[in-house]
Image (tube, rainbow, N blue to C red; front, side, top):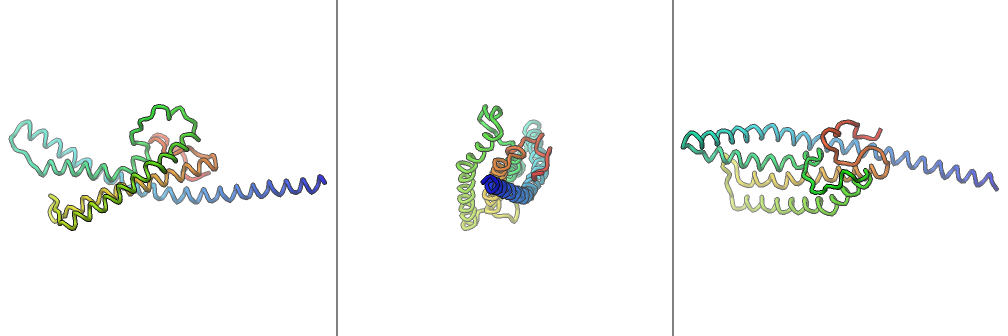
Length: 213
């Protein structure tokens, strides 16, 4: 009686071990794929930052000096400042979320356990961030289509108004992708218990391989 029972227990443990190894390999593959999405969005954020931040700074500097010492004011300079800031904010939404740079109003999160942090992030993305991004993308596309129908113009030569308004759905699409990546990483963390809950602050963002070792 003891022999068959021990054999059954051993077989069950072996199956569970094999199942765990299988899901661990699935998690490794998934995290490797998610890392490619992160790199793409981080690249977009960094390029946008360097391409737009300098014109914003110089246009603001020129505007201040011109107001202070001359009576010359240029609407073009103000347009560069306003639209540059608008484009920059929209294009770094996703990058900022990966680096945990979005403002958080809670003061208790730092005291929570890693598992509780992961659950909070998953629920927040599923209930708030995800639906909000979908709504913004839908209305942003509709807004851009309306600008195209009415042939709205932009101050940039040979550029129509719908080009600028298309940045709204693009920006929130990047944030939606970032949210999906972070949600899936937290799910993997809860299942495997390895790694840390996402997102990580900048000082911890690259201290470990994104894939499970």
